[in-house]
Length: 288
Ligand SMILES: [Zn+2]
Image 1 (cartoon, rainbow, N blue to C red):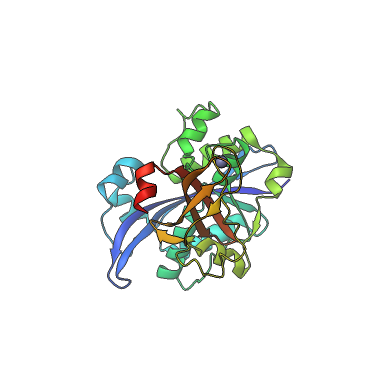
Image 2: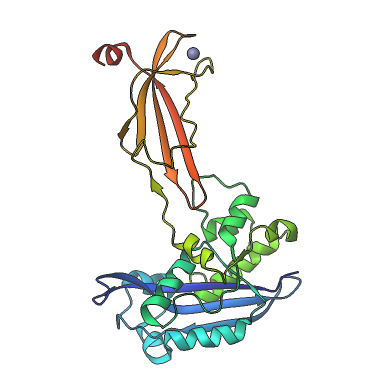
């Protein structure tokens, strides 16, 4: 059984003149520690003093009920919050967040507002959203929201302060209880004290636009007929258009022309490929 800590952050978007961009500045840390029965045995809460803006955005205030006074009067400098959290968390626990976006924001805040280039308290990490998404076989292309997930598990959240860091962590703990499987979870825990972890976290997938790119080298660009399943014959050169490669194809079985599309996206590990095929109308064929 792993020691588990669930961490949640609230943040406020503010403009950094020094960085020349908007930064999601963390305003609250909240976390819960779980025992072997996944019961909450301890919690952590701290407000973070803002460096960029004295005022919270209306939307943030509305959603979290955190006030400007909370931050101004009770906020502690980020590096001190991180030190306190590090002491509280220890080195052994697996730290979980709901999606890695909190982690991405945390890393950005470390780099903007402290001397840290990595997250100093992170040794083992698990993206809880990804785990739950996979075990319940949620729709592939959709983000699974925390509240949606809790509703799917019929969790009563009436006693939980939602959209607050500790409350959201508690809700995560309730969700984890409903779908905890030690063996499966092992496969989702990542070592976080190695450079590769940060390379992966910061990697942005991108669409390949050049058909001669070395990433295309291993991609199977073949397209099958949507009617008979036969492999189609390509009639012209691939062209790049609207985030995919497109070409004309012919099925000799069906004696019909098709337009085939392949999108190749570079991911941290390898490439992701999406294919589609559409019959061409007679006029389109004659025009080409
Ligand atoms: Zn066919």
